[in-house]
Length: 265
Image 1: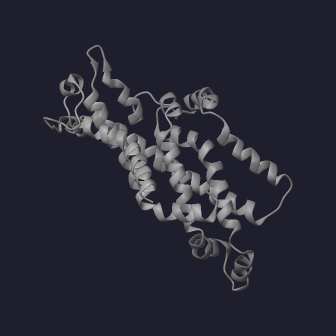
Image 2 (image 1 turned 180 degrees about the vertical axis):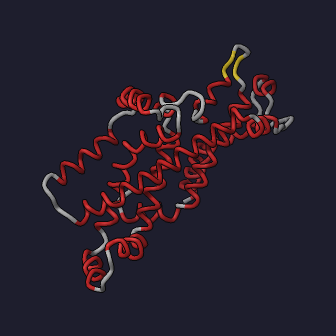
Image 3 (image 1 turned 45 degrees about the vertical axis):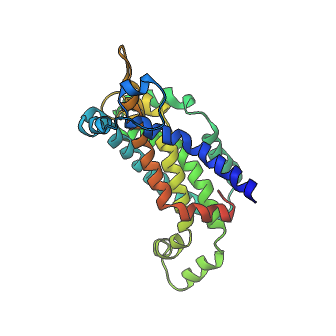
């Protein structure tokens, strides 16, 4: 038993070491970072964080990233909920083939769609806007959300739909008041994965933006200059980039656990 605990502790330490090192670097000056290896800051400083929160060219990247991620998550769920209900409750010609085609979009690399999206959004005036990235990410997140939600919806007995119809519930009322609360865990899991996939995706986010909607991951590359790499500033930006994902995991942790328990995640 002690050996198992030692192995588990070693594993956890190995996982947390990169995060600790990132936080450690974020409180150091560039001179201290390049001078040598130290386990903690000898002269802690908040200058890196102050620069990010006071420089519009930096904090605007976080605003842009959060904007298109929230838009994408809302659009993905709005499209996936009725689609998943249709797949779980009705059988029609080609339904399995259509379901597989949706999942095949998730399998395709984003680089395949970068050029078509670039030409399309440039033509319609959506280029360099949060909507461009949000709509592009829907191509990958909607199929994933449909697949997750369909599993949760299929677990709900059809008799509930029929009973609500007999009791005089209209479909919108039944869907909003009765059905959605029953699949709340599935909605939480789908929202989590849509948020995370959109948050970490970089290729389309960089291709479809230049200045006004540039995400934080693209802005972080500006730390490379003729003077070298600004390691402390880059580390502080990395720490702040981890926070939204950590907060989302905290709020939906129970839904994710139940999703794993149901075997759909």
